[in-house]
Amino acid sequence: MLLVYVDTGGMLKEVAALEAAGLLKTHYFPFEQRNRRVKTFVPGSGATWRQSNLSWKEAPGTWNDYKSSALFEPLRKLLGAQVDAQHLDSAAKAGCSVFLTSDKTDIWSKRDAIQALANIRVLHMPSELARLRQLVESGVNPDLPTE
Image (cartoon, rainbow, N blue to C red; front, side):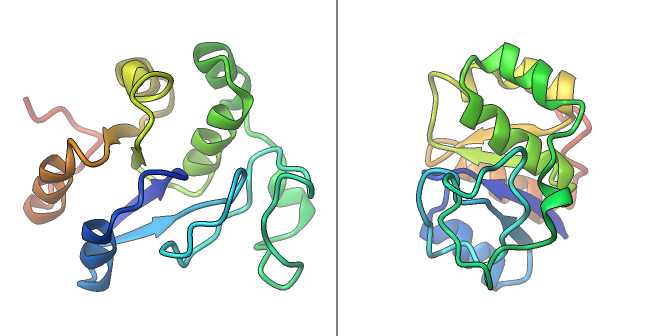
C-alpha cells in the first residue's frame, strides 16, 4: 500500500476515493489547519502545541515523537519556510514515499531536490492526479524513476 502524506491543500475527494478503495493511506499533521478528509495523523516534526490543531486525545505518539529528524534542517534550508520543512520531515518520519501538495511555488518547484534529499516524490494536486493514479494502479515503487 502506498503511504502518502497530504499537506493542507493536497487532499482531494479523488485522493479520498483511492484511500477508501484501499489503494493508498494518507497521513497528515495539522500545522496550519485541520483537513477533515485525512483520518490518520502523524506526529508533527518539531511541532509546538500552538501549531497543533488537535485535542490531547487526537495527538498521536508522545512528545518525543515530535522531534525533528536529521532531514529537517536541510529541508528548511532548501524550502525556506519552516512549516513546509515540518510537513516534509513529518512525511519522511512516517515512512511516506509520496507527498501531495497544492503549493507549486515553494514545494512542487523543488520536487527533484526534495526527492534526492528525502526520497519522497512530490506531486501537485490537482494537476498530477493522473500520475498518482498511475503509481497506485501500476504498483510501481514511487522511489524508482519511471521515465
